[in-house]
Length: 381
Ligand SMILES: Cc1ncc(COP(=O)(O)O)c(C=O)c1O
Image (cartoon, rainbow, N blue to C red; front, top):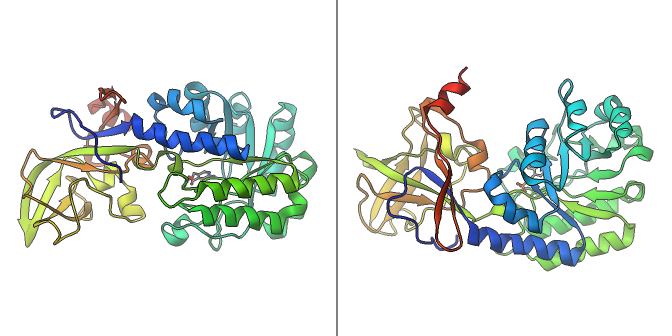
């Protein structure tokens, strides 16, 4: 976890705070990858989408990749550059609408490509196909985050490759990783070279998906660069990567306040944030998020369970220890909160959404969006 920069003492909580200095450091990694490997790097907006950051990100990336019409439109309207889109299946009229938004449209199966190929080709779009290459390396959440887990719905399986119209396919897509270090990235590239070489020779580009945790300490970027260069040299194709989490890991915080400290066998601090509404992956993965100035229970003198204010019994973030006893009004800051937390948040229980804020490099704190009652009520119709 990075060190926590100075935040205004009076900031309104809860707030997701993007740290622009940290994002700039991560973008330098992406810029080096593009430059030295000669590949394209897209932001997967499913992991992070804050248009206030896109000015900076645009300089180091080739565009965005989307999970469907709305994300593609957001990418087109707020990021620009290339717009790629993939969905396991498209809804009625979705592909037609995407033709005026996305440059590259990826399909999941022989059935989906058969339905939409003529339409997408006639509009001059590049056609991608997602393959399930049977390579499992997701380091997070086991089968929950492994696109090649048994019975996965993602991608055409190896036994059906012969059903695809390879003469019309521009891009082969293989997303199989999740929070993987370089061994996973390199392993995937070498696996595709070994098992799909004959098909790679028939396309213009291979997209190795996301899950490349390129900004995580311990990730050897040089190993990835070398693998991409070797792949390009062997097959003469372009290479595309579309990380999400790996671009924004450790670039921001969720700042919360203690509302009350309850006692039931242990101290339980009830916060103005919550796992189930503001950091749903804490419960879904599950994982214990890093907290600044806190340690594991028993380490710092005052153990406390951090919990949300929703009615869900399991809305518990975890047990930590602090150097002093928490009291109402104290601030609790969670680290590494830019990946997936803010894109997945919700207003369950009428829980107010956190501010979206930016901490600029000169220390200026800017709230770019504050939500209110209407955001809750409008969603309910
Ligand atoms: C097709 C595809 N591309 C890219 C990503 C981004 O992955 P990550 O945020 O782990 O880098 C995902 C994540 O689920 C995905 O499904």
